[in-house]
Length: 227
Ligand code: CTP
Ligand code: CA
Image (cartoon, rainbow, N blue to C red):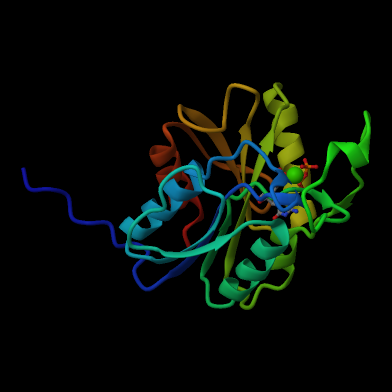
């Protein structure tokens, strides 16, 4: 049997994907971070590349290798991610916000390493809200036909309540699609199987997928890719 013809359904399209987890500096050597490895975003970038798209990956502290054949823009913090994503979103046909963006950052970053002697036995860190990258990109959409996709990682165990949380988030962000998955201490992040539901603009489930991150990435692209 001859091999199947290559899938070039995204040829001529520019796809912006954010991946990884931001780090918010406390001092030059310490940060607040999260458990995202970037694997899901990297799988999405590879899947879009393999469908012929021109892919730009805005990558925050990846714990997996960046894929070949995509343009890589590396960032560290949420504010850097916002600046890079805004710049790149301008030309994008599809925007996928797979990065885990810190909701808060330290109100101040110490210019020198913090010392216990100056801090004592108990320390409070004041945090301030970070900008919402997804909501910003959705609001600043350069063209009406640009497709904007968000992710929601929730610890809610009840499937109906999980979807309800997703619907609220989708509406609050103004995205076209929201990929909902359940995360916990031992699921969702890193290797292994994930299970997602893709909500469409009206809040309906337009796709469900379960499996390794590459096959989930393919199912997500099937659901959201601009035609
Ligand atoms: N997101 C973002 N900028 C932020 C926070 C989140 O762009 N400052 C994006 C994420 O990349 C994801 C989506 O918003 O695509 C949902 O992220 P999530 O953390 O699930 O939602 P939040 O709105 O931050 O709500 P909360 O964490 O309070 O549940
Ligand atoms: Ca959040």
